[in-house]
Amino acid sequence: MSPTTSSAANIAFAELGLAPELLKTLSELGYEEPTPIQAAAIPLLLEGRDLLGLAATGTGKTAAFALPLLQLIETGQAVPSALILVPTRELAIQVAQAVHRYGKGKGVEVLPIYGGQSFQQQLKVLKRGVDVVVATPGRALDHIRRKTLRLGSLSVLVLDEADEMLDMGFAEDLEAILAEVPPARQSLLFSATLAPRIGKIAAKYLRNPVEVRITAEAETLGDGPLVRQAAYLVRRPHKLAALGRILDIESPDAALVFCRTRNDVDELVEALNGRGHRAEAMHGGMSQEERDRVMNKLRKSTIDLLVATDVAARGLDISHLTHVVNYDVPSAPKAYVHRIGRVGRAGREGVAITLAEPREHSLLKNIERLTKQKIVVEALPTVADLKARRLELTRASVRESILEGGLDQFRVVVESLSDEFDLFDIASGAVKMGHEAMLTGGESDDEEIPVTMPPRGKNKGDSRSSTAGKRGRGRTPAVTRVFVSVGRASGVRPQDLVRAVTSASGIDNRQIGSIQISERFSLIEVADDVVEHVLKSLRRAQIKGKKVKVRLDKPR
Ligand code: AMP
Image (cartoon, rainbow, N blue to C red; front, side, top):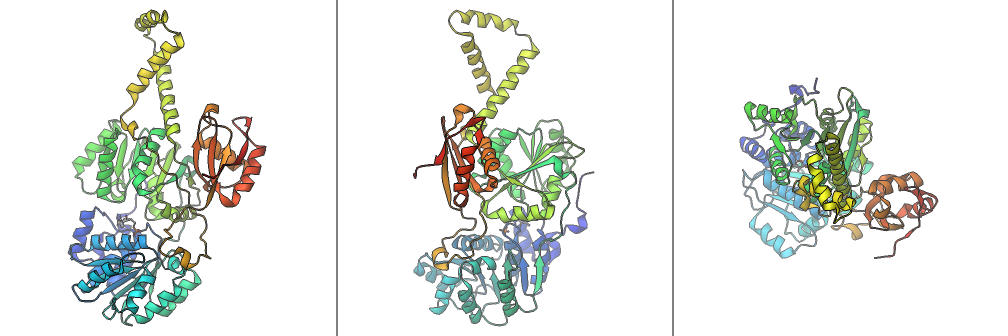
């Protein structure tokens, strides 16, 4: 039996009390069903309740507050009806875009305001009249003090990523802003953690709030150990290339690739097919006939990639599935468990791969905590790995071809060339031809994909002056490059180096950054605070059976 969720647990957007125009927009965006935080928060927010939401980025929390807000606020007034405070400029832009997207049926005017941007430009738009302002606290306060941002008509206030705002030293600014807003407004506070400071703000400024947390209960993974769970941290613009590379290395017999929305599914299918893969879509917008046709293709191996939304994949039974790929981190641990429960069944081995954006690293941690299983963050296969893997496949094909026999008619070609060339060269030339013929066309995309390391623990001591507006979430920690005297010539691959470093020094592979392998040496980035220890340990260790020279790389 495939693990399906009972339909009662899956509430539809239409049941949440949202207005038809918003439902239409959601359908156009390809959203098929609410995420858990949305299902829990939207009805309560539509009732006008204050809310304390414990949810990290990637859970769908932006829509959870933006949709009710858009439904409830007055639009077209001279002054804003809603203010959303966020910690960073990036988030201000991102949230403003989301509000704009969700509110397009209603024609809401949204303005992001943040430090570093021209004051005049912001003023011009504010004067014209905006409905929703999305701002970083410092710049919001500047405008409030200059009376260019008037909060007298504010009916909804959202503090998004409140813990992050406090970490960035915005506590005083927040207090000052909160003192200015009308007491009758609806207030929402979102935070990834419930630190005591968050509790204090909630107690002081929220009125009888409902508290919504996304599942705290553990999720069980059935045949868990048979599934290799890996994750790669990739920024959005590099996701497609990363996926292509992972698929090339893994060469799945059949893979189910999950996306969040119908639109994402369609886009990814097109992009994958454009790169020489054989993929088809499966989503809620398709008729039963279309779905059956796609499933048949998968069963007959006419395609090997099925790209699906959670809703569409429910109840599908694909017996020969070898891989599940999460193109986006699922919005809740439960969805993760359902997705990867589709491989590693009936005693077969399976692979579950998750592509996460660096800022979504905390979602992975959340899933690990609730499933009590490790998801190993791996270094993305390099172009060199890919080349090696392709040669390996060619080697296997040549071997098969030899074993199959029927070579007699080709011997004459070899003989006739043997006067002129060495037999090794003749064989290599033939292998080259075969190898090139096997390439599918996606290889021109062997572009470099920057390697990202997961962020280490938060730096609580960060002072606001050094971080405000600059610190993107999931910023890359400080690293130092270590030189190691083995390279491609010794057959070293990135995974050999990762293994050598982790087993010699005992550090976590998350403390290793990008790895460059040259012909005779390699450069390994490791986190600053463990670099001395790594140097010492590697000097005693062997890589590929050899003692190696190890030292700090010269500064670039
Ligand atoms: P957030 O946690 O608000 O940063 O949202 C994470 C991502 O999930 C965004 O790219 C949203 O567009 C997407 N998203 C939010 N809600 C849904 C939903 N119900 N179905 C599909 N995608 C969603």
